[in-house]
Image (cartoon, rainbow, N blue to C red):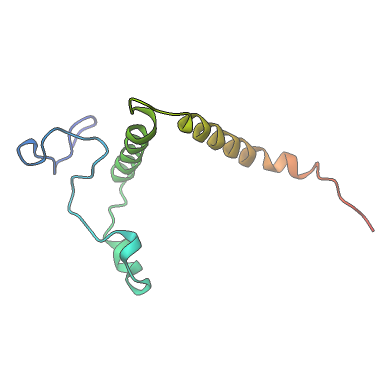
Length: 107
């Protein structure tokens, strides 16, 4: 599979129009339905290649787009979500500098 191609599992005659938010591979048990003893086997069945990780991130992006950004009557939720994510990111990268400016009470 080259960059920008459809997934190898996608068949337009079976699946219909392509949806970038859908996984076309073999279905597996959802993480919420496995038992604690089955976690290792479940994780070993995952494809951990960079291409598979990029595909998972892309599907998550498109699911978020379809749910919050692209509806006809989209609200302000995506703006608040992006703002919260940016605030969390910048807090995390500046935590080392802010940690030294704490006010300590010595007693």
